[in-house]
Length: 446
Image (cartoon, rainbow, N blue to C red):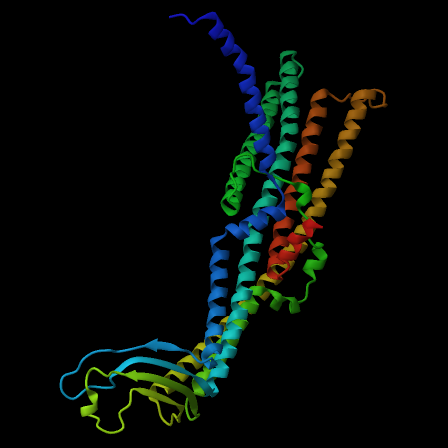
């Protein structure tokens, strides 16, 4: 059945408006998908399960510290045990009771408080270390996406030059000027450029997916803002960083704070022996009347009863506590050894990265010089192509040579981008190792 003319007219009129709405939506999504480095790091730190777990560990450590300090604060409990007994009563016939007790003097408790405070420091430093690791992960993926997008733009230009070269060689082969192998070589060059472009497109999409998982943002259309990436400290400054900067790493500092906590706990366990323990206690009880306890306690029985006093204990021998002290002492030695090992590993990593920085710095300089040489060579060829060589009987520059020079210049520029990115990755890892990652990210806000 044919549709009516007015319906067809309305359908055609809606098509341009639908396309316009779709284009507007896509434009809005593209604008919304552009994100700065600092924003990406902030979102990742809020979205990271590792950060949330580290925050919970800090809260747990703070609760343990409050628990150890609050042992000196009297507690208050209400209760009762109403009931009926036939025959001689068991226990106290308490209808209602209120009790309160607290710690008055404990030599190991002071060490336990110090241990808990050091544990809070360790958890806080570990949280900072986790945040810096998240910042490193985001920054590496963000920088790689930025370099991928820049190289893709360069390859788009190179693709145009390669396509022009293929067309020129096809014309020259048909004219009998160049052999067929020259055309095949041009096609090979174009295919290699396209292969690299496809590879970078895939790598950029992988970086988008990683950033999306880290930040919680959609991966479609996610792009970087090159201006939001602050320059790292100079390679020479990072390469010459002294070993004294190694303990500034929050991960190593957290390990030493944990060892300190274990040591204080060990001191406390040792001091549980041969030292007095004084506690305060108070109790009020209202005894029952209906069970006729007076016939069993004819004298001295009363319904309201109050007791208050202190309990002093001298632990002269306790095999369990002695074993616990040996156990905690071993834990303290183990934690100290772990912290020393972490410091050694960090020092070795920093030394390796310093050497890598020096090598990459030299490679960067080589790539930069080669890129400048390619630019100068391109200028020379373009000048000769336009104005001639200026030398009689010298061979003229062909259009294919000009396109090859364009391709060569773009390839050398890609080499510069590759070496810059390799250097940037090592610099970011060294910033992480020296505890400067967060400061570097925040520098983009200034």
